[in-house]
Image (tube, rainbow, N blue to C red; front, side, top):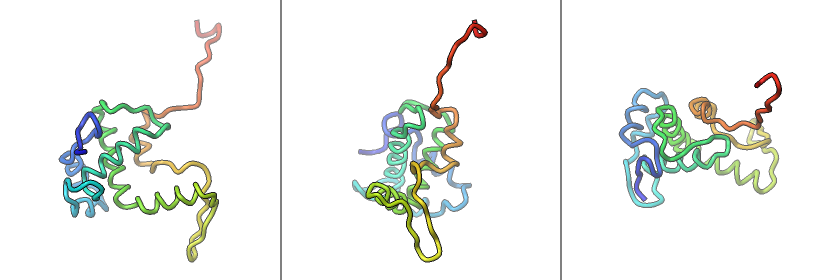
Amino acid sequence: MALVVGQNSWASVSEADTYLTDRIYAETWFDLDSSGEPGVVTKESLLVSSFNWLLGNSSFSLSSALTDDNVKKAQIEGGLFLLNHYVELDERRAAKASGVTEFKISQKMEKLEGDITVPSIISDLLSSYKQGNFATMLGAYDV
């Protein structure tokens, strides 16, 4: 399926290109084709994957119809993150799913505790859409 803003994406490829023009460490984005065969890493496939990743994340209350610039930026940052770190993210998810709690590679050790969350740059952009574990309790002083 091709990228369709308002259905499976908040941002267009053109918007992503514009945003990433001034983003450091984004040069790999510009090596990609805009679209291509199914399953191939392209700008469109990364944006759609990022959209699905964020839309399905229970930490945020998002809808496909949003037009907020911060939501678009978060999706674009997510696409760039997936481009550069998808393999590592997938390996961590698989390790956690199989019960691994920590691993060591050479001198680096990592504990796999808690949920694997989106990077803070994305979470910060979506701060106004965060879901919380709180309730509003009204008392006599609220009337």
